[in-house]
Image (cartoon, rainbow, N blue to C red; front, side, top):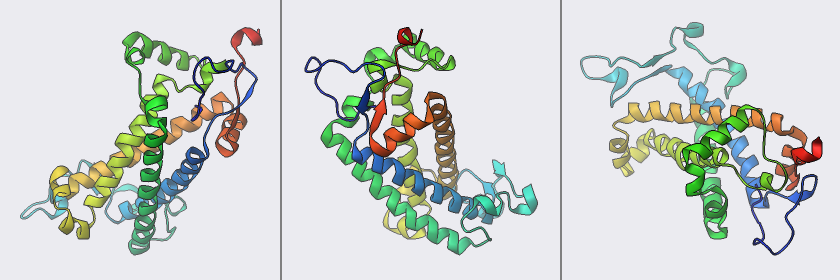
Length: 260
């Protein structure tokens, strides 16, 4: 989606095959910083999870006075109690202390990059203009049409490819305003030091163990988004898509009538 577009009527709409500026520099920088940061945080987070591969709801988990709360996810019996192998964790050898150092260091980079991107998006109107769903787009008929088109691998062509469709808007909005804030806030809740400074965070998530579970689920949601995103990039044309996120320039897919 182009981050900067001219007002309708000021110039002819681009056609399929045209090379157009699609992504602003800030968007491209945030995309790659975010991708690298989340990859490192995921891999270090898996090492942290290996230290206690169980998830609970509530405040106490395994440390409840007088009894242990049942875990809703228990991977302690997988691979001898280390469910995630070294090739997918940071560090590759078991070290909870080192994993925490990696995780917390890049957490601040994640927060800083997200805040800068959101402020830029608000000031420049990118969030309102490009990501906010229109009422007509939320109509069931419109949603179903987009779903069926994607299921047939029939993606927008010509000038329509410059605009995010409703499925993209919902997916990107979910990442920006649900998953990323969720993983950040639940992560802050897991810090004992911040518990003292911001005790309301523990109450907000109904306990540190609930926050840990939600942290894991938000991270899983980000992984799911990444996998779907990669599949869509491959299906839409990886060279063109990656070039647009590296240089900003994107060649509009030709209209289907032109291809016949």
